[in-house]
Image (cartoon, rainbow, N blue to C red):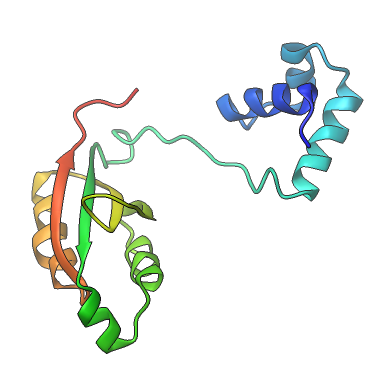
Amino acid sequence: MLDKKDLAIIEVLKHNSNFSTQQISKKTSIPITTVHNHIKKLEKSGIIEGYTVKLNNKKIGKPIAAYIMITVDYKLLQQLKIPQYDLAKKLKANTAVEDAAMVTGAGDIIIKIRVKDIDELNQFVTIELRNIKGVEKTQTAVVLNEA
């Protein structure tokens, strides 16, 4: 069970996972040793699974982001004996794909991709994605701005 200190520490780490225990201590008014012990407990219990970095996508040459809703051809997947989860993992393995999730609603899998330009987006959707066995159709939403 998470307590108020755990929640305060997690909130700080969500905004900047690079903060030191001293910086977290200052932001939360929790003693450094307590912060350290709580972080270790959160890591050991699996609540904190890892730390990440936030990239400037323009500077790394991937300024275009898009969400792609994928409708799965279940009959084909059954014939090929491929679970939908394995298809989602295969999609996630592509270097353009940032995230892949199985969802409910109009589609079956949604992926977020990052590319350098519209030509690369077109190549990814029309040549790569639509030729993967089990992908029946796609619907792409280009990201205009990210908060």
